[in-house]
Amino acid sequence: MSARVLIAGGGIGALAAALALRELAPPELELTLLSPGPELVLAPESVLEATGGPPAARYELAAIAEDLGATLVPDVLEAVDAERNRAGTRESGLLGFDALLVAVGARPGPVPPGALRFAGARDAAALRVALGSLGETPRVLFTTGAGVGWTLPLYELALLAAARHPGASIAVVTPEPRPAAVFGPVASREVAHRLAEAGVELRAGHVPEAFEDGRLWLAEGGSLPADLVVALPQPAGPAIAGLPSDPHGFLPVDRFGRVLGAAGVWAAGDATARPLKQGGLAAQQAEVAARSIAAALGAPVEPVGYEPSLRGVLLTGDAPRFLRHTAVSTVPSAASERPLWSAPGKVADARVAHYLANHESFRSHHEHA
Image 1: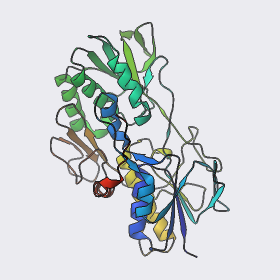
Image 2: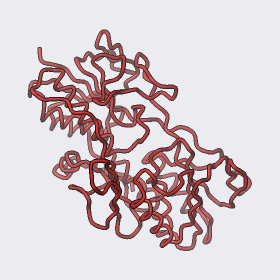
Image 3: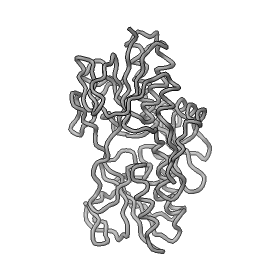
């Protein structure tokens, strides 16, 4: 009997793993995709949708699964029995596997009381309505708590809102010492410059506490006036029954994506205990895990440990800026008007980006405006 690989998830990481496995593993590999939704949504594009731009692109998972010779099971992963190699679902019963890759993402956690949550595509419509219902000269604050590692959407929302609502007074309130600090000093200075150029006020080093009575109250004292406060939520882990997790529900993994203490189970992306939750990093992690899985199933490949290269496209309302931070370059922090990697889109992964570009026919025909 051929080996069975089950990929739980319907996002960028799941697709990256499936593509890598089809390249690395024998063609007789039985591949199953377990996804709660029918579409792969390019979540990084939801900042445009939320601020009045076009909707985030969506691709039919059924078409992707058929193209990859995979079985699509529309259901939710609820539990795992690693000893018996079985995955429990909400409606489809138990699914057997020889290797399981968990790429289910994270859940949106709390935001400061009174703030409007923005957790990607699921909140894009609500934010779009909220911005559209403000008066001519509103004051809008974009903020995030201390537990959010990936903050680039915060600055994109502020810049895009400033471009589409020129009468608004817009500010960013962040616990970071400098904007987009994870990209290093060069890229951070570029983000700060774009904010200043757009007239967006920056309040760095401040932790939001609550929005009430027209003011955003700060944990260290003081407050700022606002008509609307938008906050990125702190991510929460999936806390899957039967799998080990940290106190926040995230799965602990090693350098090869193997879930610690669960034989035959790997994980990638936002569901893991790694601090940065970003699509490009999820794809890199998924490809590392796929290589490890292929090797474990007997394919003639060598596992390679995870060495992240952080890449991001800053949408500004004008020309985008390409940001990069990597430890293996002589220029670890970089920012440019020109692409710094191949296939330079919001999906910062060449394999996934090329696949989707070559399969435009899989685009959903009912994307929401």
